[in-house]
Length: 180
Length: 136
Length: 193
Image (cartoon, rainbow over all chains, first blue to last red; front, side, top):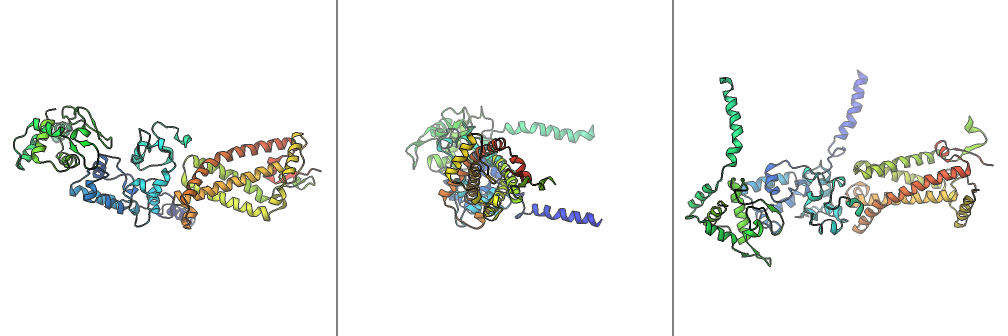
């Protein structure tokens, strides 16, 4: 009996360490997938529904200000006040800087100075560096992609919050990994 | 049999629900609301004119009208002038989902009027446009 | 007690043998985990490679005579002489690495040092992780981008070196009539008189 307890303790210590939020391994790899239907519907109606874990809360606050929504990168994206507040709450409480269990969110936060609040995900240093070696012909001049802002045109599982290299498929350049 | 009456009734309701929903065209209801906000009688012809009228965009060298993004054939999907986003057909005859969601009608009138003509549309203008689109 | 017979002597000490096979395992695993994007495994294997290489550098100065860098640093003239002796199929004998083998050792060490250094630099610059990030060591964008390119290109080059290394070992085994593979496992080789 004593031995069994000892064995269990010996097993329990490393396992609990593995599951530990900060020291442990299984921090998830991507960003947290979407959990809010109102957000998915309202924002996904027009563009890829970017996961809140792709920007810090201070960025979402700026983006979701009523005046900012009226000129949302050249489009009018006004929402009624009730929806706006609900979406803002979802975004800020799941933002990159409030996330500790998803690796990409952690790296996004690490790459930003505390007072930096980029409005575009493509301006986050971590995201920028990750894409800086991609030639123009693959994205900007590729008629099937056109811009880095269309995450899901190349990241085949972007909607699941997964952005690993192995799951990238650049339209028209299936063999992209051999090209650059 | 009595024992199952409730279940059967529920099943019948569930089965017929989608049919009932899909059929709900809210145009008359919206128009009644616009009239309560001060609009008069609605004219499909005026609606069509309004739809096609071109407006100079503030910062861009080209004009904007509803057609810039919805296209000229409203039975076909349109393509957004700037972003290339595909917009489903406007004609309720080919897109049964059109004008079935009051919240969406309100939201997109507000956004698109401001984007296209630089101000919100009046209840009269909205009622006219719906009158025209509903004939398609 | 065959090993203790007078015709056999210690060629590669225990450190060298453990180092060699650890390197084989770590490099292979790092190559595969890199190819399949298993990030956590890849970085830990990389750190292990760094430690192995650092230990080898120290051992190259303080280790047994056959393991010391000075033992197998040859002049170009001597390397050329050895190369010609191989062409004649009468290779000159060396207790430690022969001049061509030594070239391979230095090439592999340099390649692996560049590979791990570029990995660490890229990790600190672009991944916001690892020793450089933890120690808050800044890496310029230029260096970061360069490290990424290098880290992508080097493994293929090293793979070519590995193939050459194995080929060289097989050829040398035949020419010298000495079992080099066994020497890297047991440490012993037959003394040539």
